[in-house]
Image 1 (cartoon, rainbow, N blue to C red):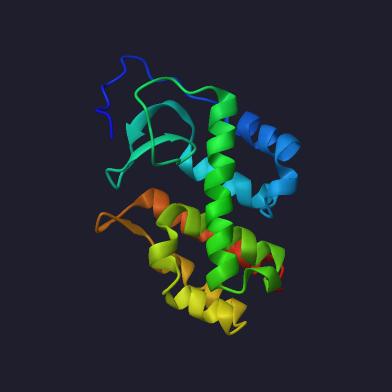
Image 2: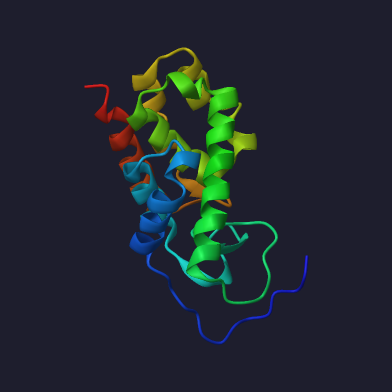
Length: 173
């Protein structure tokens, strides 16, 4: 990986704009609905230059990691990276959590947490176990347990997990 130098000015991008771009240009490539994209986008924020997230992982755009260069990224590049990252989360869910059979609200919420935590940790989780048992209420109630980054409870993760849990339960009532 190249050294990432600190860029003097950090430029934000519009989460709403990126979501709009994804829905208009990539909707046929992903299963995640606008509700799921809203949770991910609003929790991650959007920055056009590389930064370190609270878990000290180099990130750009809307929570995108890996192969990051020290430069400013365009909205199109951010949307494309985000779609690729969402596809990876969806693939994990489809392979390890019976994703094709999940209600949409459950699927969207699980995409958000998988996007955030990563497939390696999620595929052996109790949450995925419950999904595979089709015990969706128990799976939804697992979200609040995932409130730490680098071993520390973060208020932002508490808020995100509550939103994910709420979305997860939407189609079950």
